Length: 138
Image (cartoon, rainbow, N blue to C red; front, side, top):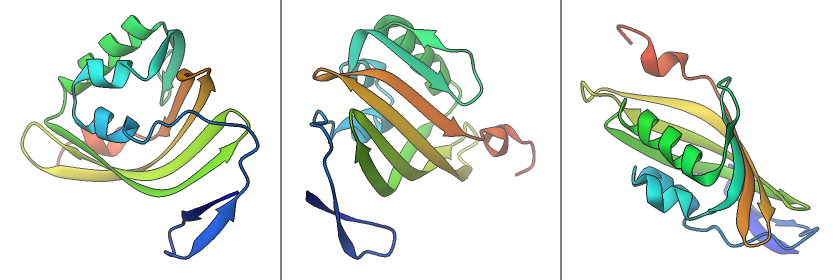
C-alpha cells in the first residue's frame, strides 16, 4: 500500500495490485509539448486512443499524432486531481488547461488510463471532450 492525496487533500492508502512503472514525469513531458519526451514513455508497439479519434498504433505514429495536436494549441497543462492503480493500469483524473492560438485558455476534465507493458506504456487512453477547446467565442 502507498499513500495518495485525493481531491480533498486527505491522504488515503491505495493497494498496489501489481507494480506499475514510475512515470512520475509523464504529464510534465506531455505538458512540454515536445513529442519525443512523451514518446519516451511508450513501448514501440503502443496503442493510443485520444477522445473519440481512431486508435493510433506504434510509438512513432503516437508521437506524430501528439505533434499534430500540439500544432493546434500554444500550451497544455495538467493538474492532477487523483490517481489510482489497479493491476497494470493507472487511472488519472485531471483538469487540463489548453492555451489556444489566440492566447485564451480553456480548462476541461480528463481521465487517462494507461497500461504498462514492462517498463513502458503499452496502451494509453484519453477520455476527454475537446469541443470546448475548439468552440468559437468561448
